[in-house]
Image (cartoon, rainbow, N blue to C red; front, side, top):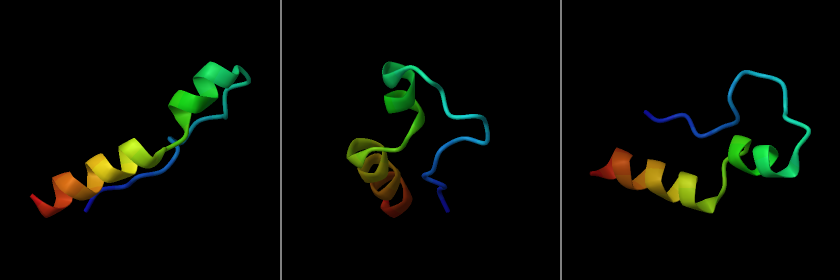
Length: 37
């Protein structure tokens, strides 16, 4: 089982850090492939 969600910490204010903080399509796809492999 893989958890694909934001970490348990406050959301960053900077847009660049927020983009790294939140899961995106690439992170979700990678987690799915790792789970099914």
